[in-house]
Length: 317
Image (cartoon, rainbow, N blue to C red; front, side, top):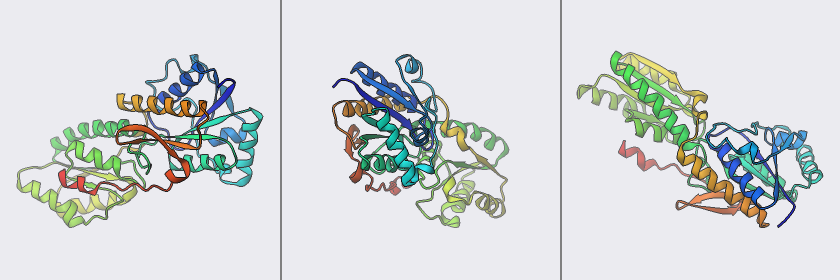
């Protein structure tokens, strides 16, 4: 269909691969005679009318770049009815025929408000936590996990040299998937995540002492930031295991950097799918990975899907 206008926004925390997704949406739309507007700083951009026209040139060299060229933010004003009204008014002023929102659960809830106000939307899961219930995978998770693994591999060397216990706090306020997958990948002595209550004696101290009896003198404990007990755990290990401890908080370094090939490919496939849906008049959908394949789901039903963490995986590390 001709003379359509698609707007793209990124909201919430940035995730490596967002730019690859923006590129795919833009290229797909422009090849189908559809204009593309870039909305700066998420839903704030809709309210403040902060946008620009995206061309092939804008996206010609961004597939390898981390972050998002659209910038991102969380919008308090958009949570209000007046904020939504301003955003809807802007969309109508610009004759926007569809919005593609890239982000996490909060972004999807914001897009749902636009849907309810008759602004067609398609959502793409972009969050390093991989915590979107309706999708097996979210853009940015592979890069964030690999970044954490690379950092901890380096810490392993100094932990061994000084015979220390290194406690590494990774991102994940409510979701422990980064900690879980990173811990398995680096051969951590213990992994602590918010979804599963831990027992210090059984889950942390006992594995350390067991390895000590086997002749090991350095240890890696991976902790999700949402647990909130990193300093307490460190002190208890030092006092009860009689070993020097060090805490390393990886922080936002996990959000940055060039996306892995997996994130670039998944982002490209999701971006293409989202643009193709809107171009063909299909909207109010969430793009998702199901059984390893890219698909789309109704936004209302998809938001009600919960995602359980695979606790059985803890048995293998």
